[in-house]
Image 1: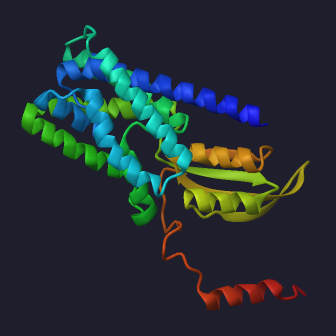
Image 2: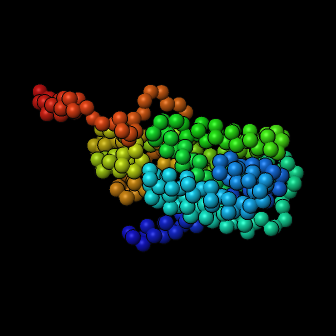
Image 3: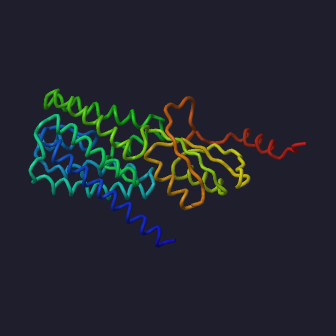
Length: 302
C-alpha cells in the first residue's frame, strides 16, 4: 500500500512539474515578448521584470513566498508542499526559456496560443493538487473565512493588475492581457475537468463518520448526511458537500485514505443560494440546541 502511494505521489509530482514547465514556456515565449500579462503574482512579476529588468524567475519566487507562508497556516500541508514544488520548477523553467528565441511577436498569435498553452500548464498543476499563483491561495482563505467566491476574488484582483498594466504599457496591452486571461481560464477548466469554480460532491460510503470528520478537519467543509439503499449493496450512507475546484484533489485523497471502495460523484454547481456553513469561529454548537437534539435522538420512536 505504501509503495502504491509513493508511486502515485511521484506521478503527481511529475505531472505538476510538466505543467509548470509548459506554463513557463507560454509565459516566456509568447506573453513576455509582447508585454502581455498573466494574472496574479506572475502578472506583477512580468510588470516588474519589464520596468526593473529583474529576472522573472527570481521575482516569481520572491513574490510567492509570503502567500505560501500565509497559506501554510490554513491549507493542507500536501497542498502547500506541491504548490511550493510547482512554483520552484516554474521559476527555474522561466530562466531556462528566457534566452531562447521568441515563438512570435504577433500580438494576436501570442494571445491565442500563449493563452491556450498557459491554460494547459496551469490546469495540469491544479489537477494534480498544486498551485502556481499565491493569489489563488489567498482567494481560498478568503472564501473559507468570509465566504467570498474564489473565482470572483481572483478576477477582481487580476482586473486591478491589468488596469495598472494599462497605465504603464498602454491600454491595448491591458486588453490583450485580459483576453489572454479569459482564454487561459477556459482552457484551464477543460484540462481540470470542470467549467465552474464550485463543485458538489456526493459520496456513498460505509465510513461516513470518518470521511465527514476528515472533510471538516482538512477542508473546513461541513457535509449533509443522508441514508440510502442500493438495489444490490443494501443500506448505505450518502454524504453531500460543496467545495471549490482546488479542494477536489484533497477530497480524492481523503476518500482514498479512508474508504477506497467508496463511490463519489463530482458535479458542477452553477449557483449557491443560502448559507453554506464552513468551519469558522461562529460554528460553535449552542448548548441548548445540542441538548435538545440529543434528547430527540434518545426518544422512543413509538
